[in-house]
Length: 356
Image 1 (cartoon, rainbow, N blue to C red):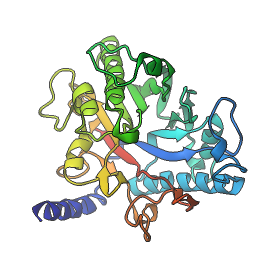
Image 2: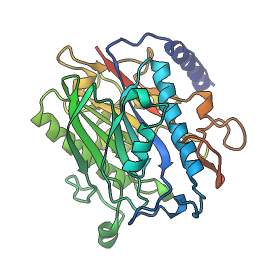
Image 3: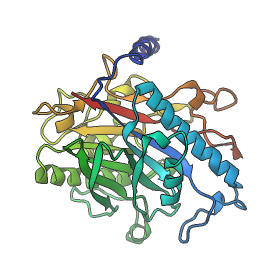
Image 4: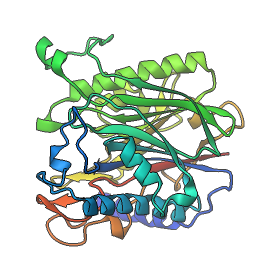
């Protein structure tokens, strides 16, 4: 009862915060798992057969156009709420450059002038991570991918046999370094191994170790660089991959050297969610920032509070939520019960705001 009352009180404060003034020079940085953004054409080497016109999902051009329109309308709705477009928007579950070009060209997004970064990865399903950015604010200097491997430095014990390890494929992490209005900046876009069969925690811990080691190297090479890690981690902020291996801390005050600030950790504890599974709300769509954004030593941009208690946002308006049926109250997804529902995604977008 007390937890329910707390959620109601916090929810009321968040509602009030929705009308708060966002500083004019602030930036919106977010992440969205867009749930299977496939075109209607087969890409060689990809298991995209179910997303073809004659495939299991009967994925026609009309359905593809509906999907593009839906995702574009979500991005626009967030811009209208915040009074500005995302300067950086990471995405997961995109098939290729073609779908990103088609999405950026949608009339709902035309005025944003988005460009994108995308690199093909070895995922069997053919889904990758990508980054939308606004070139008038963000200048891309370097694009890299971090492939998954089993070369742990910390003795992670893997469930997979050596043969299974050799055959394992998953999404690469996309790392983009650039300058955000002159400030050195880097963003990691992740989609870590799934929880299928309630397994894979060892793989997600290794994925976090790979990203963390790269962050440490980047901070050493570029002192003061601002870093954001975002993605569908397939784990909650308090799980080991994020809290232990990525060194995510619940508060800025408890951060020590080498730690990251994990704003959605407090939000998850307070009952918020970006994704629902079997009646349980999760925040797999995490965003973390390094110390240079959490508590900078200079007067540059830092992460800003979303309300008196939190630093993160989950975008979950009624139009993004299923209103009836067995999935009522959860994200309005593209397919429901194997049938095309015409929805948006099975995840809500998440974002943070940085400014001075």
